[in-house]
Image (tube, rainbow, N blue to C red; front, side, top):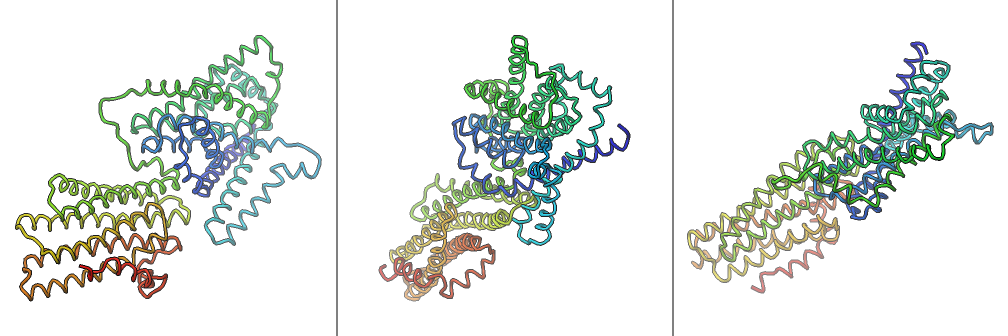
Length: 583
């Protein structure tokens, strides 16, 4: 093997790894919707978790990405340790799909159809199709599809170059002797684990082994322990990722490690024990790409069969490894590990935004309740909720900026932009809750009291504002366009109520039925209430606009106020419901 063949091998390996990387990234982006659905399908059933992990990994073609995602889920409190074990098992099986795709290299036949199935025949066609889509299609979805196709074509081309560059090694005695050394099970496992740990991809290391198999010098006796070792090596990524995570996230990473590390010696012992009793004649036979795929899948399935009845034991071993500590368990609500799968990170931001909305809603509800009577405990809770909302906005804002810097689909990019706007509105709502507390303080300290008529009028407006808050909160949580469409008409009613209450206050002031001091407090209250409804309107408008792939909220509000989208009819209904005439 001369220097030029070595360069070919290095170049082929580079193309192979590059193609696998861009194909996996594009698949993750394309499969954003499926990845989001993972959040709603977590289950305590190991079998269902296994199927889920297999499906997700088969789609994104990376068990490392899946297990890192799982560590992030556990660290964020989305998934329990027990739930993670089934998904981890599935990830190990799902990643074998790559080896089956690469096994197409082993296809041989004289017929036209068989020749077309060979990568050397269809890869050029795929490449030109991918380039054509990339050049002439404008949508991001089409470009993602093109990237997947080109990634696969690059991967297969790199595989072909590697195979061609090492084909001549079959006539090199030194190469054959070196491979013979790895037929020792212990050395084979170590070699597979080390190589996979370095490149952090079991799919890639299996692919390299498949490329070497074209030399015809790799026996089953070497391939089997090396493939088993590759399973151990791929756990390094999750172990590294779990550094700094909470105890259950670290336990999930160790569960992944033990799943492979304990399975390997047990299955090796069973296999070679049977070999000693029965005698497997095929061990001296040579493997090709197809048989490596078979061994890889068989090993992973055997690992699952071995552990499926003992998932609680695996959980126990991981728990013993990472012991409980006295300090309170901490969950990172937004884990940077999830940035590796942007679609999941966006979905997580949406969930945390809904939690922030609950905090802001609780704060404003508490502040409005305090207007009916002072309660020190509730007062302190409202102050704490406002501080908590501030912390959420700061963390969410920073995290969404990181998410926006990743490769997002159009849908996820629009969702991230919407969430950035919404968290600002939610934070302002909690600020107005504290502003209302200032009015509560003034009423309490100065022993002020609204007249019975003024209090009834104010109650009408407060009820209308509560209605706006409830509608926008429900629209955010459920994505209901119907609820979102009701917010702006009711917000306009709140605006009208504010003007009406001010006008009525002036009349009472002129008659001497109210004081200027009470007027200042009332004006502040009306302003804060009206601004709360404004921010609720912004949130609802964003939900509606995002459904139409737009972000011009001000343009939307102008349109609805001109009477579009049944605005006038809904406004009339709310105006009747929250009328001052009955006061």
